[in-house]
Image 1 (cartoon, rainbow, N blue to C red):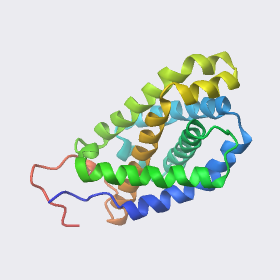
Image 2: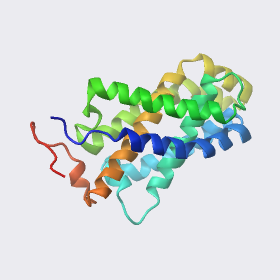
Image 3: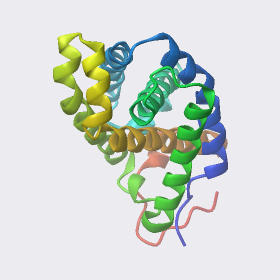
Image 4: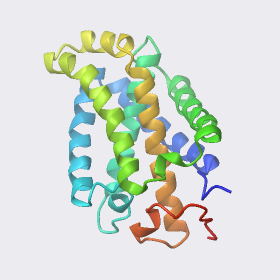
Length: 206
């Protein structure tokens, strides 16, 4: 029996909450501006997570900060970029953003049937490192064009460099992290220690 599997219905609800803001970002800003904003937000988020021992759960559970709001903003821009990488028109309308969000949750759920909760099996530090690996791959692929300031070239690269898969994976992991934080809060377990790895065979009785 696996421990506290992800709530995919809740993840679908979180994804749908992302759609309208992500659509706004997609329609108003060229892709390069989205990416530069995302890069700055990621640096801020990463700095706070470092202060919490690289534990993304501990970071999100801090009650006196707006950490989840920052995580939410990062997630929405990642969704917008993923849609831009998937759809030729950078001003893709509502259905495309919504389809990207729903299909990502479906993908995460499908992978969950194979991999279970392995993404969080080593606690909040391991979960953050999974996010960080995806981000590092995206940043390495896109940094050269983003630094050039040419958003048309950046958008072409976004669609041609293979970033789509990593963007979708990162969006899925961010949804998983948010779902896990909501689970801990719902159970009244605000202590980040609850997100630490459990002994083999442990079953959550909550």
